[in-house]
Length: 403
Image 1 (cartoon, one colour):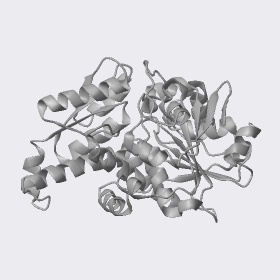
Image 2 (cartoon, one colour):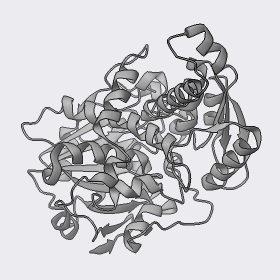
Image 3 (cartoon, helix red, strand yellow):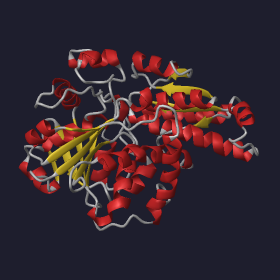
Image 4 (cartoon, one colour):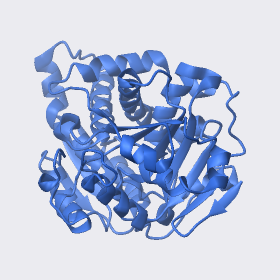
């Protein structure tokens, strides 16, 4: 089933099946032992704490569902987004592996610290992933260079530089900056810490995604309803976060897993086109969506391995819908406590709101007044100046919110 409206497009995934098994192909990407290692490591870091799972009962009533909960990642490690879980963990794993190749143990702190100083990690970013990689590099003592594309805001550039990274602005879009980061790393002997996978590059994106799984585990452990989520709406850039969350719930619940709905910006709808085509499909152009963290034209191969049989549908939404979502949360429009959410944080929530009054889509998704919905608020106001322009108030003026 495929449908469209002024603000969104909808496409069911004919490859998806609740009966599909989480098999060896998926286990090779994300698995429980690797997640357990990631969880133990991240929970040991200074500043670790649970991010809140916020009930949105007012919005739930407006959307015609039984319950709605929002995992608010705005406070994660002080970095403002869930990306803190992935990039920094991958930097640590890179250093461990490279040190081990040289016979250096992380338990020999002096030798490990000296070794880390010789290493340089890099990545391409729309903002949040680069901030996490830079923070991880600063925390673990290695060098860092971050590549940003033409439309990344100056505020996000400065936020990365705050963690000691050198930032290089590239021409073109996000995917162009990915290619430039890899080419430079190959030339300089640096290591790319990317959240997207491509041919010949898989291990490090797995580390990133393994870190993201912690967010899903926390959400399920915090879940207050008698039954687990029936539906999860997940925003997609390259798809790493959506795949990580889906993998956790798929392993945990098998054929009883929640219905998974992806939310894709219409201006960079690589997942919408991929689901329509039934195979990885790139979109081209400047990808100038306001949802900067989701401005990707090519999906991650690893994410496709997870999502091709488990993403039940995809919704493409407009930038205008995202801005309305930011304002909806900031205002507490339907009686919920106000929340600060960045442009990329609200795609999953707004995908729910866009289909709330569409009887055909609700039926296709088996979404009704008993549904229990989980969404992830993946960032706070990571660009405070832009947030104020879009919402009409500074993050600090939104009662109960975190920038």
